Image (tube, rainbow, N blue to C red; front, side, top):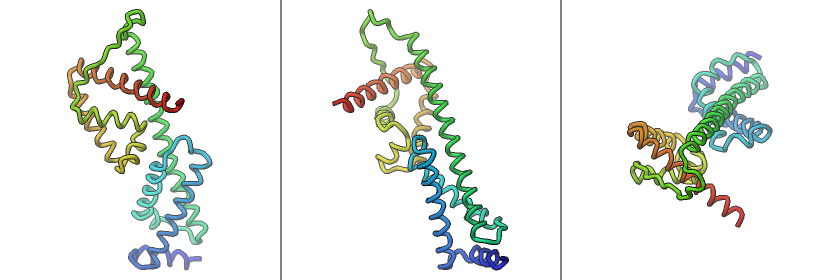
Length: 209
């Protein structure tokens, strides 16, 4: 079946041809079907559609930038098994990343809750302390919308932005927070917890209405 390997190399050498375009679309369609199948079977509660798009794009980039050229099989079946392996590994990397993020988020939430419980006035003192957040209004508004969305992926979907753009914005805000004095960073932390609690209470109330 050396003819198949020869045909593949011909396609790779002339990527702009109609035959190459049809071949790439067929392979990417397979990658998308495989990704959706794995998501339905295993990862429905963990990955978003944005994550799946990221996986498909990652596999497509790998195939286009060398993975197909390195394939040494001699049948279509071997090729699709090869592509399936790359797809599974790419999705697996994203899954592990999401699990690490979830673990870190849970740990940070637990640590922050413990810290806050030590500084919040006892119930008999009653009055709620409202933190004065030192961030610029545009940063506060952005963080509020992000908390209301619940995740960067959901925010990106709601506001028709790429997830990368949302991540960059969050990183810029985090840099501005890191540059604040210690007491101001504490004020930001308290403000965010208060806002998150209020948003959660509103969402729960709306769900029960």
